[in-house]
Image 1 (cartoon, each protein chain N blue to C red):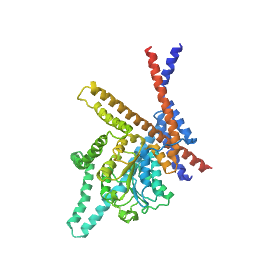
Image 2: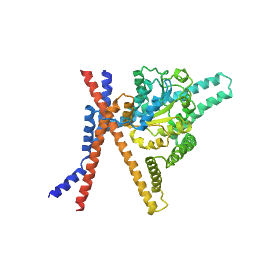
Image 3: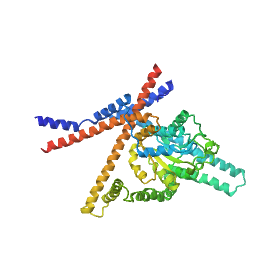
Image 4: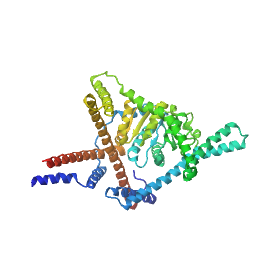
Length: 280
Length: 229
């Protein structure tokens, strides 16, 4: 009788309605947002490489920072963009930005303006927003010749030659580096065209889902740094000593990951226990 | 960060919060709130794309140069260079219009011309660069010296063995028995470790998105409370 009860328990656990799992994850994620724990964040070498390269640039250098995310991926990539923009502006570096993902154009315009305002940076003098053009591959290839080819005007309609910051700036060779923050496979275009074709120094910031795909490019030295997901953003926030959304979210990540690991262990124990009992 | 507690902000944030909760409601089961939100995003995206494309691309790259070059041509003396510049606007415009000929079955075949044109350019530009970036460079990265300290040698050996055994798993011209079978089995383990790390990153990614939405909902509540204070 007790044995039957035992089988019933494990079987019930396997057949649990998945909505209970959703609810549990929802609570596990929601509560730590309200009660921060301040768990430590460790910096990885691939994020530190990006920080060190930006940090070593003399004031006035140009960093190209394409920001290609949309509402669906902004939770991961927006904190990354904020952290890098803060680092660039605090070092008085100049920033050229594109938004080659159509859904994110206005979000990126607002993000750029918001961080620029924090450091009293002026559009056209300290930063330029080129905006969107279709077919990212062709746009990236064209920018390697001249920014003016795909973008005769910036996002606000000002001809590039009228912008003080763009005087003498023609293509990637005038930029100290490119840090592509990208939520799509458009990263491939940057590797292919900006790096392979025009030998631009390239680092990437991608969503966590994409990160494993691009570690191969890090070991082949086609990119000099990689910032992966919210964890990468939290590392960058730590490096610039400006903890923000990503740093706070790491508490939630740690707790949620622990819970998911426990769920996986329970699920496996239940599976093997019920299978063993069935065989008996 | 919470925006200013104005009526407009409260209205738009409340609408966004309603849509967020509508999408979340699918986790319970399919329902009309979810479907409305889903249809809204499809319709809004299409409209938004058209507006963005018109304002940031068609006007900039096609319409303005077309007008400028037409004025230059017809107010001058029809120099060859001006005709050439104008043709660079007219030909892509005509090819673009050909795409709409799909609506007319008799001449619908003309819509294949711009597609063929685009495919040819893409293939020509991409193939050599893709081969270089994704094959040659990756092969070069796996040809690593077995020198240095013992740890480096061990790590490099893992990379070399993992690459060769991973490829052995996808070699189907020999039965996976004996040495090849052993290599393929090790290759499967390497692949599994890769999939495992991808799964871990995927979980992190999805949790990040959930945190983002919850953060938004908390901001919305704060905004509404601030407005009615």
